[in-house]
Length: 145
Image 1 (tube, rainbow, N blue to C red):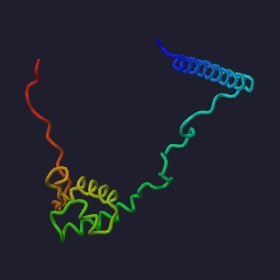
Image 2 (cartoon, rainbow, N blue to C red):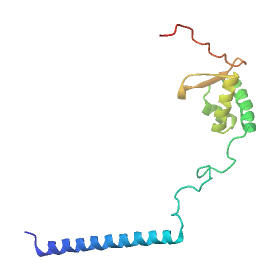
Image 3 (cartoon, helix red, strand yellow):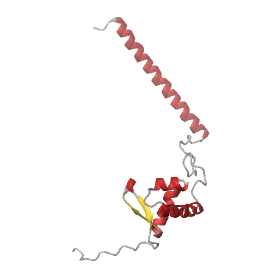
């Protein structure tokens, strides 16, 4: 059988919960009445409408083609003299930022100026044949019915 102290504690907890519930309901009701009286919509959370970029990315931070063109020339010259390096070493050797070096390398691969060997982190770059890679031929074969 519970003693008197436990009973008092339980009754005070019940009173507190009841009072807290009453205050929350009252606050909610006042907020709704204020919104309905003013005709205002509740404040919208998140980024303001029309701001296309995330935080920390100022407008105009994208790379221009001029940066990539300059970087491409530096990268080709560097790879001619230092064959078989990864993109990180090439970027460090040329003084070009890594994201710009990656974009320039992708462009140079598409043009055929560079070729690569290896996979993922083991990718190294070599001077290409000077012509764009051939398009893959269509597979010939029978159609399955």
